[in-house]
Image 1 (tube, rainbow, N blue to C red):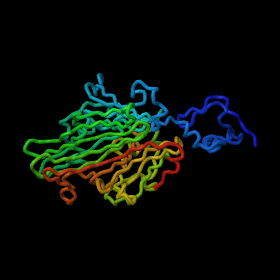
Image 2: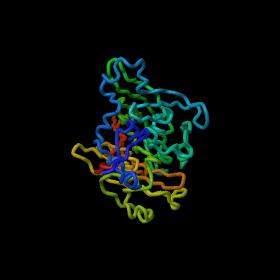
Image 3: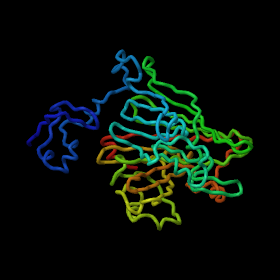
Image 4: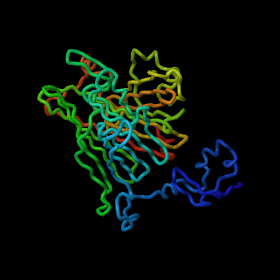
Length: 405
């Protein structure tokens, strides 16, 4: 067998591999297809390379070598000073594991930008950063303030299309994402005690005098060295009358994680809808399991949407996600079906508006009026609460290629 030695710096998933640490077979070096799969030709097991990663969970690797936890990561708050988002409070979170993301405190503590190493994970709309517009809950005004981002929360009293009935009128996807949070606490990692956990907590209120009064306590947490985001929402009825409640978590992903051929991984049954005949030929064939190239038919309001009754594991957990086998980059999403029995997949493959979202939800996005009419609307009693938890995890390497449900 003939070998070709590497005479330049080499990287695998962002990890530097020293000169001549690996050799490639000549066949792999000359074959374009196999060159793209070159990791499989390495003569030393890939797990050795994985062990080259900085292991923050072992304090002996960094003990007595740091002055400030910010060398590893943590939470940093700031205020935007320019453009349509001027004056908006944000919090950048660096996980110390390649994952860093921006929590927009003035937009319900939703998440806009998110990156893993050099790759963007989230889709950001043409609007981008927009300051909160608390009185935009009419018609489709929500679209004027929709910045996209890794997480946009829809609700918490109504989500879905604009709707009205004898109880009132409500706009597209509700008012939550246009409501600033009251920041309650920030817990930073403590390098001296070895506690590498962090969290940020805020309160978001959607209230009307003499009417429904809902309060969300949102906690976003994680641990340095782990490429995960844990989101916990506790929804309370603080009023003295029953409060309608619906919520959908719009997890918007874009290029390069999302690309032609990226796998959309989920398990369950797509529910029949009246509009199924209007879905694209691409999804008539692929059944919402694959990402398309940009489609002309998705210009303007073109879209494909699947309402999925998801399957669970033995612990009632739903797991789904996006897997880009070419980049060996994936995003896993997990949640409890008892908390959120629905999974929505929204696809909009418009040119320059190229996005898809997997969306855990309490209901399909049909609006409060329709949910009330079909008997599925949640009514929280005074003092009653609901809890929702979502875990987002970045996957790399062979784990992506092997991710199946």
